[in-house]
Image 1 (cartoon, rainbow, N blue to C red):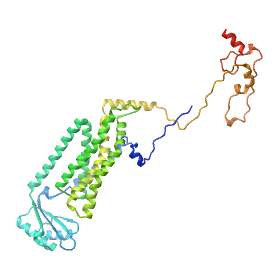
Image 2: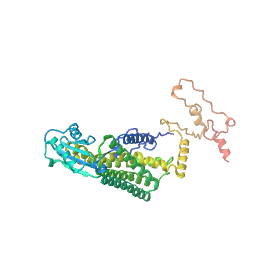
Image 3: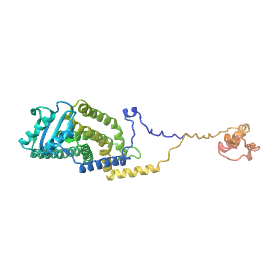
Image 4: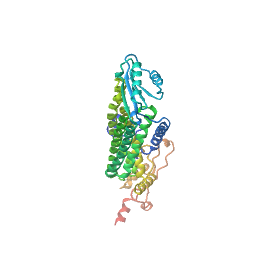
Amino acid sequence: MTAVTEAPKREHHTIADFYHERTHFNFIDRSWRWVLLSGTLILISVLAFAVRGLNLGIDFEGGTQWQFTVSSGSASVNDVRDVMSKLGLKDAKVLILGDDSVRVQSKDLSSVEQERVSAALAKYGNIDIQEVLVKSVGPTWGDKVSSKALQALIVFFVVIALYLTVRFEWRMALAAIIAVIHDIIITVGVYAITQFEVTPATVVAFLTILGYSLYDTVVVFDKVRDNQARIGTERGDTYSAMVNRSLNQVLMRSINTSLVAVLPVASLLFVGTYLLGGLVLRDFALALFVGLTVGAYSSIFVATPVLAWLKEREPRYRALRARAEVDLARRPAPAVASVETPVETPVVIDDISDVEDMPDALDVEEVPAAATSAPAPAPRSSPTTPSAAPTSSRGSVTPRPRQQRGKKRR
């Protein structure tokens, strides 16, 4: 009899495994790694926000903004700050856009003070005063923009929670919202660390990335719901194991969707902003790039593990896990190698003469090749009288003669 050993799963995957959805990554059982990674990123983001805060644009804080382009040479932040300091505006924010474009933001000033600053900046840039663009935003309008953005975010959460609860269930809705909050905190942390200006375009980008993050999460949850109907059909199956299979089945789709979404945004951010000088869309592109990247991560490593953790608390799936642990404990250990075991074939003898012709085959046991040097035992002699033959079963070492078997039948 041959014991067949089950082929172990490969530790490394090939490109064909991803393409044909043959991956077997263990996402759920190693979720502590993703908790550690996400917790570290969230902690860094919260500390950066608490220490440095956000660089809110003029649309949120209110004030006056000047923007101009120097006629020759390149602009310097220190030189522009010196010009503003002579006018008593030491707290002005100076931003160099490219090499020769300058943006200056300060507190709200009167029209006379604005004209005086415009004249000083025109003199610095060696341009006419009409070439200095002035934009004034009141603090009331900035507060209105902030409140509208917060209202839009709250409405977004409520609508998404209702939709996911109706479409799936409340646990999936809760897991998806946790993943979205995770994405928002990390994106805000990136803005706090880099001190990029937060503008209304940034708010629009926030809402865009939230929609994308939920789209990828819904794709994964839809596959989980399809496989949930077949849970328990395999021996030792659990809800977490089913979720892990679902993640591997949609992994290639998630990677393709993320790449298709991130590559155009990356080109807009790096090529359009830093190579071609399109700085107007930089804030929007940065929020999109960070949000899409973090959203692709959270749909697999945050939302789905949270869902598995919530579902494993249900009595049905707790009992399923307990049964799986019992089955795993009863399962025998797999054979290390294939072993060939010889099978004994019974010998049927019809005539006593057959015993006389092959006594060695019946009386001498087969010994391994390593023990061939040992002397073989002497063969037994066949019985001379019918009365001496033992009454053993058919196929024994010394069978009965044919005459005695015939009498017993009669």
